[in-house]
Image 1 (cartoon, one colour):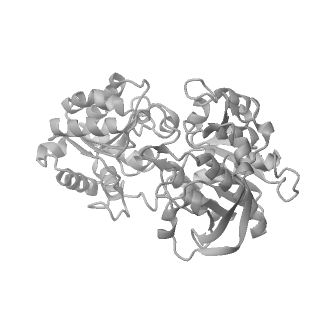
Image 2: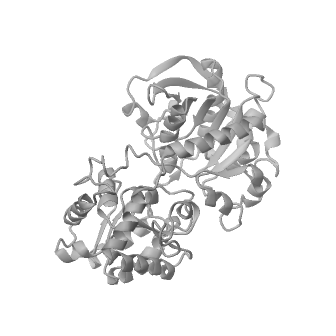
Image 3: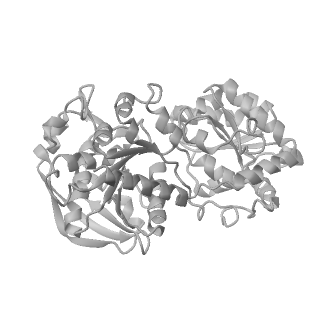
Length: 487
């Protein structure tokens, strides 16, 4: 099968969120299954520093952008590995910027133009390469116009009309909603502005277009695929998704065990495995000392809870804010790592002074510290209000750091509650998005933590879970086949 993955971000070249991790890992797993896999993304300013040996493809792409005029894009080719080529679409006006989507003041006002050009360039690129995929795997609203264009502008071209598309929703909260004036500005078919296509409350919704025009749709966990057809989680598109329910699937993301594995991790104090957990104790001692928490024997015995998160309401940080004093009164120490809303920066900074012996707050992105937190903590807290997939809980399982999560999205699909499944449990799950319910789960975890034999059984069981990309890739291949057959 010939597969093209189109994405606005791909790790390690450009990353804002989990989307980059998915498209940075899935192609390798698909390639190992003997498929011809290629990737395409915009050539941002930061790409030049992160890839060596970019080869410029000679021909310029001349892209008709409606009233905006004809714009040029350059094509570059690189290698993610020997087996996986990656193409970059370059246009300095649109992509040579310090940030990917916007500044601290908000999104770039021309994002609709930027990703319309990118989507058109993705399709035009194929003729230059003389390589036409069986399926294009589109990701989030930035590439949602690819299936739209295939069914409108490119529909009569025999080289294109056999290409199937799947559209992956990584987070339904970000839909790409723009003024309907965009149709003229970038030359999109005027018929797209209708309730059964891309019209959305008087505006144009890119994600809605991706949902309607793709052969198949998927989200990044089975539970999230069911949640988003309800008004509570549907962000105004639940009705559209309901009409396509038979074409909607959920495939859990994988994690890269070459990067996240306590047996091989060079960032942690002492490597360990589920057969020998002594190294984990050394990791905890080292983390407590490095973070300036009490390094007495008492604090080693106290449960250490880690949070690595974007600091935002979606992640349930308001529940942590309200419950912080009670969590510490349960006998726990906490380490927080992340950046986000200014409100949470101020709140957690203030709390770190108030509870300086038991709470350490790191308001930054720090990959090395993240590894140390996963290895050195006893528990990992993710109280998300909604979570399409989540990677933190799967990484923490691998490190034997027991997740405490809310029952939503990918968290519900990957963590088995110890109380309900005594011999299968891998974490502690709570249902309501409330501080009270979260505290109850934390208390249950701490009570079990006091019984070292019981706790270590859970730790070993957690470390034995398999969330590798190989399993997810096989499910994607089945979905690609379904998309091709439904053409």
